Image 1 (cartoon, rainbow, N blue to C red):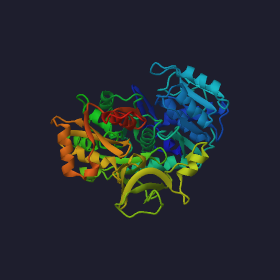
Image 2: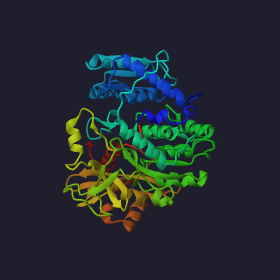
Image 3: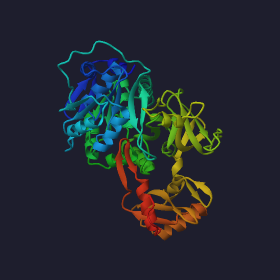
Image 4: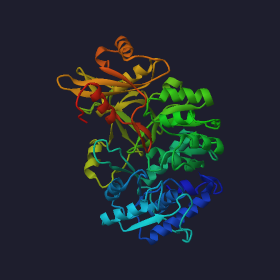
Length: 508
């Protein structure tokens, strides 16, 4: 069961580091039982929902394990959200209790939480937390019972909402516990290891690495706000052994000030910024760390698949990987016919296993459309099989139809990135009447100057003519935003920029 992840093992081992505070496994277990008593007194029972709008810290962890004990469902709310965004999550979840800090980063969360309560008939209580980095509810006796079961819904993760309103992918207690143990094992997390948790717990990658650390007997170093220097300093101070984040995060930490990262042993990343090969090379050259790519999503957990840490640099940089457990299966199918495709042929990646969500919370229509008739989850991702592994290509909806050919933008991006004048590339499509999709590339220049004409000429010599971008524009930085699992490139902004480059009216 999920609570066993905490109560098993040596109670004197450190569970959490946050700033100057530390909390042992035993202290966190008792604190979680006290939180369970508090929630029970509020009327929370098995099957009820508690929304947690808190920064990472001891109280967040308390409430998660308290919910596991009571059989309740935790719905994390991003601390980046403001009133309307948080209201959507709380309403979608039908939460009975909302826990929020009084203030954090100059925002009145408590005031916003009470406004949410006035708009939600189901929401019965708002709990204000004055200090989120130290255990609360010390006046309560530890809850003596155990109502939680492996089949209970325990935690949700918000989807991106790129094709509509964000949905809440919900996972069971048993699935979370099983995945935590498997992630710990595949990443060789051991008792007394230290995991830097620089991504928020409300995001699936931040959550999975933290729970996996506790399952393995390792300690978590919590950073409620990511800053590269603070992360590098934490690695040095706590002798961090494991660190998972996006490629952009790794790049910032590797380029931070004069800190020793020598204790760092394992790390993996989803590639959002096109810096995968670069950070793999930097980490190996500077600290001997074998970084690898990973695959995951809110609906099927982070680190569903990973690359072999013993593989060569080229192999470790390929997005996707081998499922981390034999209990996780994948197949590649033709998106139109549903027929399974052979190795190396691109199609939709579909998954089945304990890691797949139970469904979208309180959204049966979306849940039904997310699964095939024979029970496989439709990821919406374009991929191809390579033996026991799969290679992630991109989102199916991001594919381009160039002169009648279906083209993955990553193919053009990867080719451009091979030019010495290009640090990274992003390619988007713009619909032009009478032509269909037209490719436009945006590149980050390296220290080797290169012109647009030179890059277009280079493309014409190296890739099929229909793949050559109409324009190749050098920019200082890709438009991006911080998400729960790291920095993501804003493709919609790039499409608007591409329309302007082509002299078209913006349509997106």
